[in-house]
Amino acid sequence: MRMSRGWIVVAWPCLVACGAVEASDDDEDSDVEASDDADSAGDADAGPEVDTATDADAGADADLPDEAAAEAGEDTDPDADVAEATTAECGNGRVEAPDEECDDGNAVSGDGCEDDCTFSCHEAADCADDGNQCTTEVCAAVTGGRACGHDFNTLPCDDADPCTTGDRCAAGACAGSLLPSWYPDADGDRYGDPEVSVCAAVAPSGYVGNALDCCDLDNQVRPDQTAWFDAASATCTAATGEAFWDYNCSGLVEPRDTVCGACVSSGTACTTAPSGWAPAADGTCVVECGADASWISSCRRDASSCLPNVMTVRQRCH
Image (cartoon, rainbow, N blue to C red):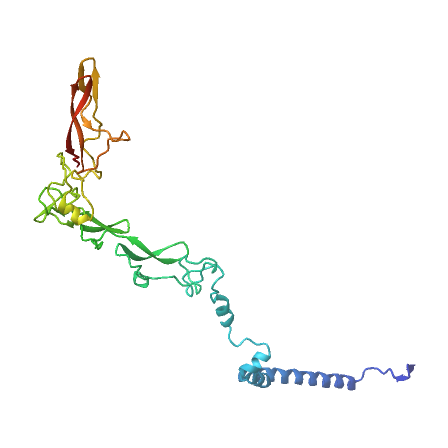
């Protein structure tokens, strides 16, 4: 026997009892192992072990309302972020189909893309008529998208001018070929009155193709007149309200005689140089149309003088 840390230790030779104790312990260990093996076999036969408490908790979580799940930080709609990310943003300068037809950044007006990122038109029927019969409305592709335009056409048209024929559109305008103009010849002198005209493919009866007459009431008044007259045209004077002397339609009143007459003595000779109007006291020789005045027709010798032979003459004009 010996003392160790307050315990009394007795050393005895190993007796049978020790083996019994050890055998007993071994039996207990064997029983425990056998029991564990049996439990394992039973568990294997019974199927997988289920943690009912955990499953219950999971079920409870599954039953949480969306609001609670949201509060817990859970995403109830996983597609929401995708949808939000793909939603078109009009005005960012990128065409994001299918919500946008165009996107010009809303920085340019009239380029075919509206502020809502749709085309300004889709077909010609969307375009307003500009009122021009020589243009055709079109919806055409342009830089920003599609916009209305007006293309020239070559269709038949009406230019509202009765003196044209074959009207047709060209370069956005309606125009036709001019018909000839005809003028009445009331006095039958082959010259027409410029104050009146008609247009037609052929001349109407009593009309001519020129407008050169200056008074269509007197056939002596016409552009080719070469005669001189000592009286104004009565009919044309009545029509105009003033003495009418322009028989040749020159636009001027032209007197026939404008020179002064004179007699020249040379030695014993007495000559007329030339015949003409006898000069007035101031030395001029101006005589109005239709007026009577002295005319030196010739000269004669009288003693030592050279004298004119004078006659009365009326001034003629045309």
